[in-house]
Length: 199
Image (cartoon, rainbow, N blue to C red; front, side, top):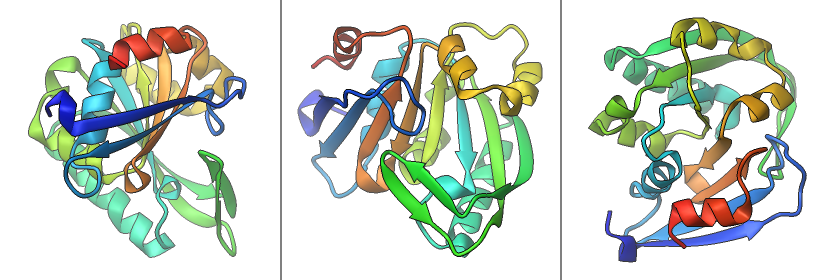
């Protein structure tokens, strides 16, 4: 995507490092309607040549429970087709979750799917990844270095938010339906992130 076709607004939220209420937020606009790979381009700038881990939960999307289940199942199919390393778990999701300061409310707890997939830099450039990034709300953990990806994926669910922030260069939540992102990082400053984004 040409740089002139992507407009980025970067905001320091004043929050402390938090995966649900991140320190920095990004809103973006593309020349076309909706996301149109804008989030893929932004994530590509942020990750540079690093690998990353994507965390997809049916509760992170903003549709009905049935719609979210279908979205997550479709995404899981895409991950398996690409032969990515992954870890999958079915959990009980709380009735209320806060994502980017937006409260998602349900009448009751629901069964939800959690998927973590390891994405090497070489695979990131494949077309299938563009479709996932533009279609599904997800968290992206930009990895410093992961010696044993499958073993690490299997332990992700046991890590606290604080451990995740310290281990990864940054954690990026992408909500493509709103053309909005949140960034939490213990390692990078506002100036560092703007430099990566080229703004």
